[in-house]
Length: 490
Image (tube, rainbow, N blue to C red; front, side):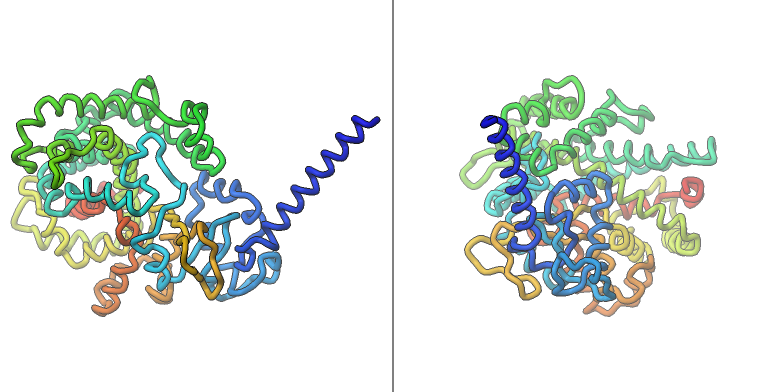
């Protein structure tokens, strides 16, 4: 009897303690003063489910629309409001903001990243550096190859891949009513990134298929990688040997991300043999890999090879998917609006009517100078946010307030590009409409403000390093794409 009684008491204490923990998270937690739904305040699993199902950006927007200012979180039945809450609690230790003026405050140059999210297989990549000091040091080592002047040296290489892509689209459009745009966009994106990274494309477009199963294995790896983003599993993957074995890829793996890691390692080793010949001229290489291998700092030290491999892997993880998603979003936005598409095509035809753009490729600067095309690209990046909310830690050692309320140090704070990109305070009452003309009619002051608060590529010192590559591909691809292919693809 005594043993049974002890078990009952233990179970009772466990239940009672769990209830107290839940009540504290809801009512007595430092973030309880911020409005938001109850369930996400008790567990990060709910928020992770939104991330897993690709609903995170829209979910944040719905939260801000539903929860008004200064209402306690347990009064969610009476939180229906026409006002937009500038800050909501969307996790046990996470706040989401949608006030444009707060973007520079949250994303200041000394802001540290949170643990979400990190790619465990390339921990030293610039993107994965949590501490702002470490990030700044890594950025100094790697960012020079992403400058616009450097990326322009690859313009001819990108033109070759775009022309291959367009030719395949036209061939597919002649053969079938429906074109598998996503498939070809991904193959093109991988070839474009590998051409810049290694000096030559992997050859997906030439093979018209998945080379060595790399794309298939990348997709397989992404499922395992996304699972590891759940905070408790992230700690398990980062801090334990078993977690690293399960979630962290290795180049000896026969499937998944390990295949990319092995290819990158082998290519780096081959280049190391000839890199000494290029040390006297850092610009003599034909790829970002060549430049990194020949780079030296002020004391003559080179970039550690394992960091170069991590940076290349990060480019493979982020670059192709970002380019594919951005071009797909913009192409489908135009294809679904024939009048806008016709107007953009007419501008291209009138500008380049004296030359065959498939023989003499327009330069990036020429493409970007087309007013309406430029407006379409800007509007597309504003209208469809293809970037996830980037989380920052509230600072240590200084008082930090949002909406007049104290935010404890170490709190995760983020902004949704989906919400900021359609904020009516910035873009007016028609912010939910795709309207390229807003960029042509805007005042210089508006254009400066929109440029400052454009969070599609990130913000401030952590803005996406590959921005110029993505931008170049978008502009040049839109100039060369055939409208009939777009219409066939929808």
